[in-house]
Every structure is written in structure tokens, then in C-alpha cells.
Length: 448
Image 1 (cartoon, helix red, strand yellow):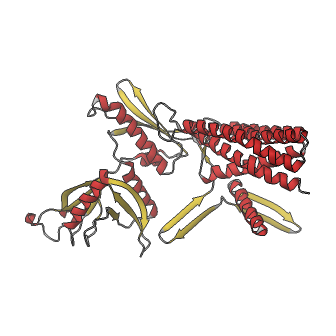
Image 2 (cartoon, helix red, strand yellow):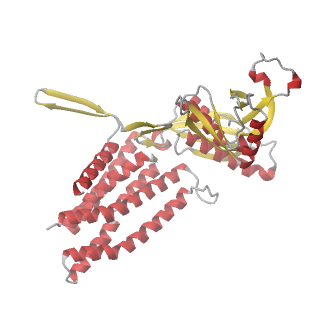
């Protein structure tokens, strides 16, 4: 059993180090007359289990201030919106746009509503999107989903009439009746499809539509464009449907996102577009990294100088903390903006708080005459409550700053959320390394 734990720990350690390796790291060295030159790419995997497919690439994502991107300005047409509903409509449009670009994989967009004279505008900053045309496609016009059936037979439409001309009758079933859409795969062919889950009212309407169209096609339209016209084999009563077509996985994903995004509450048009460079140059980024490294070294030197062997244990735990935290940042992934980097550097100093509390408690127990093993056990037991309370209060602050529920009276900007995310990850990881890892290291170093 002990050997299994050691092997498992070794594998996890190798995985964490591999995830933390710089992207496209080139290693060159000579061994005798043999020359070695190989390139290490970011760790990634592509797993397919039945109809489920999981793709993941572990790499560092930089925010707008560190990487640059695209800046778009959309003007909102508010003529048909009641004045009492104007503010809610603008906020809703902003939230839909932000959710949409997030679902497309553009992390930490900065989406804001502004007023210029009598005009209301929505600005969108997209990190890492250098091609403005691509950025516009990410926003796009929200897809309008509808289902149509054939007109009554009294219309006497010829059977050789194109199907999109035959399917003209609205069924009353639209995108508002869809609870969610997701990518699924045909169990027989593996072809990507879009699965729809209807609301209670939508399930009732869909059941009625399929009941009266058994053996007939029902058209599925996106923005009045026929996507699929499957023939109904039997009445569907479960409230689920599938959009079929010759989709690629990317096309199916984009269609599902478009449906999930919902309709924009007011029309918008693009009035300005431009590329923006990173707010900080590469020199400033390097300075931030150097500052973080110096801070880490000063903390390590202080801990070793003040606590001796225990300080060395804390230093090792701190290095492990940094490796685990950075691996988590790449796994989630967390988009690193300058505030996010600041949050990470801040948690480096905070990570030794638990060690200091534990070590001071151990020293108190030693002064009372307890041997080292008992002092360690009592020191951990008496310090854990203070460590827990301190970390929980910090996590609450991080939750408020991240504002996952989008409360209007709290911050909603991507960079603030980036800081909150790195702070939360850092605090949670420091709690684990400070209590669990430090205790294991003490047992190893002081084992008799």
C-alpha cells in the first residue's frame, strides 16, 4: 500500500511539473559525441469515450493588458425600447455578449456599457484576438431558432417543390422554449449533433407538433435559414430534440452557443473597430516576473534564517505551493492579467502564514517541556482553527470580488475577477500545502 502511495505521488508530481513547463521549451545538450535537441510542447490530451469527447491543452493565457487584442464598439438602437426598460435592456445585452465570447473561448473580456450624448454604446475588449474580423464573428448576431411545418394540404404545393418552400408554417416553437443546447454525438455514426432540451411549455408544443407531423418533415431554422428538416418517425413526448446536419464539432459547438445565448434585447450595430496592443510591454512583464521571484526568495531566506530546519521545510512547501498553483491556473484555465499576477504574488507571501502559526505553536509546546512529536501534534491542532478562519474570510472576499452572480452593486470587470480568481486559488492551495504538505515534510525530516 505504501509503494502504491509513493508511485501515485510521483506520477502526480511529474504531471504537475509537466503542466508547469514553459510552452514550446527547447532543450539542447551534448552527451559525449551525441547531440540532443528536442522541443517540449504544452501538455494536451484528446480522449473519446463513446459519444463523449474531452479535449484539453494546458497553456498560459494572458489577458488584454499583457497580450493585446481587439477593441469593438457597438451602438445600441434604443428607439423601440421603453425608457423604463432601457437600463435593463442594456445590461442584459452586455451580459449576453460577455457570456457569448466566454463560451467561444475568449476569456476575461472587458464588456462595458457607456453613454455618449444621446447614444448608448457597448464596448468589447477581447484579449488575444488580433484579427478584428474574427472578433466581430465572435459577437455576431444572436441566432433566432424556430420550427416550421408544411402548410396545409389545401395549399396544393407540388411534391417536387424545394423543402424550404414547403416548410413555411410557424409552429409557435422558438428559441425561447429551449432550456439549453449542447453538442452530442450520433451513437451509430459519431457525427456531431446539437441536442435541445425544451422547457415545460416547449415540451408540450413540441409533442403536439410531432404528433400531427408523423411521417412528415419539420424544419429547424436559424435566422430563417433552414439547418435541418428531419422526418418525424413518431411523436416525441420527452421534451428533447436533436438538430442533425453535416456539422463539424466546431460548427455544432458554435450553433449550440448561439442558441444558448438567447436573443439580444435590442439591436446593435458595429461603429468602431481596431486592434490594441498590450498596455504593458514585454519589459514590464519581465519586471513583474522578477519582482515575484525576488519576493519569493526573500520569504524563503527569512523563513530559513528565523526557523532553521523548520523554515527549510516551509520553503520546500512554498515551492510546492507555487508549482501546484500555476498548474491549477493552466488547468482551469485562469487568464493572467496584471492584477491576476499581483494576486498570485500576494498569495506567495500569504502562503507562509499557516506555517508561521504552526511553527510558533510548536515552539510554545516545546517551551512547556513536551517532546517534539507531541509538540508537532498539539501545535497543528491548536493552529488549525486560526488558519481555517483566516483563509475562509479571504475566500469570502475573493468570492465577493469575483461576483459570480453579476450583482450590479459589485465589480463586474474581467481584471477584478482575474485578481479574485488567482487570490482564491492561491489561498485554497496555500491552505493545503501549509497544513497537509508541511506536516508530511516534518514527519519525513524529523523521522527517527
